Length: 409
Image (cartoon, rainbow, N blue to C red; front, side, top):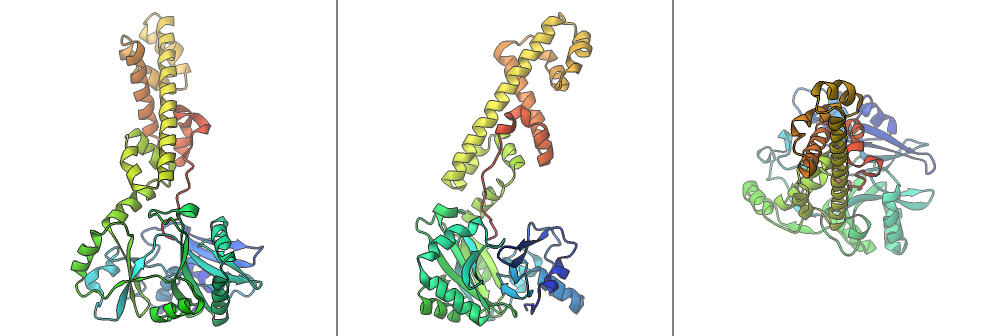
C-alpha cells in the first residue's frame, strides 16, 4: 500500500502546482525535505478510491509521504522516510470504523505527545531532523543524544540497513505540546524502509530497541473486538493523548481522548494572532487557559493585558478628541462633521459618539472604547487587516508572538 520511491524527482512531480506543499533545501548539509505546510480538503485524496487509474493512485500515495521525507541532494536518493500521512479513526470517509476490517492482525500502541524526530547520517555524522529537517527544533535532541551513544549506534545501524527509525521527542522543558513530560525522553516508535516504505512489525521494532538499549513506545492492550465500545472507552480516559491502532499492513489510525481533543483544539486556535485577538475581545481567554501549558497561559495573559490597555488608551483618546471637536463647534453637528470629524482618521467613530455627547466623563470613554473594540473585531479576517488596526490596540509593540508547537508532529 506504500509507493516505492527511488528518487526525489518522483515526489517533486507529485507535489508540483500544489501550494500547500513545500520543498526545503539545506545546501550546507546536502539534503532536501518535502513536506506539507497546511491541509486543504483535497490535499490528501484517497488512493484507494474506486475508478482512478494507476498513475493517479501513485500520485495520491506519494502526496501522503510528504511529511518531511528527506533525500540526498546530490543523488536524489531517499535518506529519511517519516510516517506517511495517516488520519484519525472516523476523521475521513475512508477511516470510518465500519469500513475497516477489524479481523485483520493489528495492535494498539500508546500515542505519545511530542515531536517526531528521525536521525540522518550526513557525512558520517548523526544529525536529528524534524519535518523541516535539521533546524533549531532539533538542537535539544542533538544535545540529548550526544551524551547517549546508544542512539548514535542505532542510527548508524539503521542507515546501513537502508531504513529510518522514527522517534518521539517528549520534553516539557524543550518543547511541551500539551501533556507534561517532566523528564525528557526519546522513544522509538517505528522503523520504515527508505525505498519501499515498509513498516517493520512491532516485534522487530522492540527487538531493535532492546539491542541498542533505547526506550520503545508501549503497547496499550490487545486488539479492537468492538470498535464502538472501544471508542467510547478511550474517549473518557484522561491524562493521555490516546492510542494508535497499527495493522500489519502498515496502515495506522489515531484515536484521541475527548480531553486531549479539547486541548488540541484550544492550542490550534492560538496559532494566528487574529484568532487570539478574537478571544481577547470576546473575553474568552480564561476559558482557554486551563487547556494549555502554563507558559502559553502566561503569554495569553500578557497579550490580553496589553491589548486591553491599548483599547483603553485608544478609547480615552477618541473620547477626548470628540469632546474637543464638540466644544470647538458649539454643538453644531453639521460643522462638527464637515469641519472637524471628516479630517480625522477615525471619522466614523467620532460620528458614532455624537448621541453620547451628554454622557461625559467615564461613560463617554467606555462608549468610545466599545466602538474601538468593535472596529478591531471587524478587521480580523486576515493578518493584513489586523495590521491596519493595530494602532488601536497598542501599536507595533503589541503582537501575539508565542510559538505554538507543531501539532501534527
